[in-house]
Length: 124
Image (tube, rainbow, N blue to C red; front, side, top):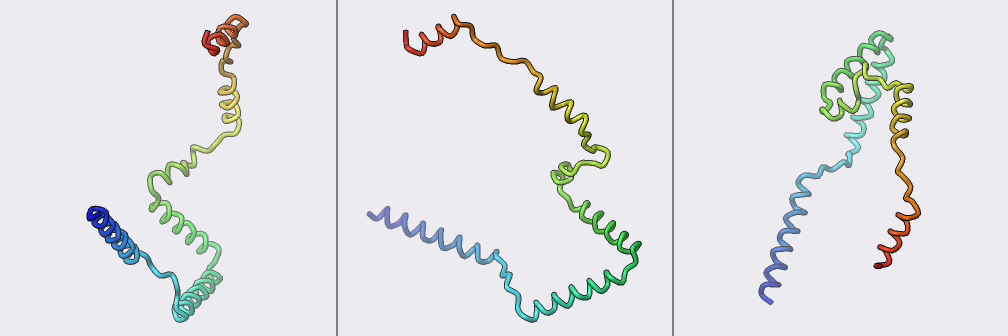
């Protein structure tokens, strides 16, 4: 009985400490009205600045943002995106798919082999 009580106390302590640790790491995403107003004002300023840009400036801004995003990619993400010179070729893909389907077909069992299988499955 004492072992059961000790196990219960240890389990309760572990569960309580996990929830306490989880509360420390979570962040509240509830914004105060002041924060909401500040974010809306920032967004409006950004929209006005974007509207005032020339097409060349917009293009340069997009290019810089893409370069920054590309530099922050992990190796797996970069490999999955592929290089521009490794573009997919539909004709080569169709040929590869047809070649993979044209493999050897399994041979059908003869009547004698079927009878042997039936006998072995019946236990004779």
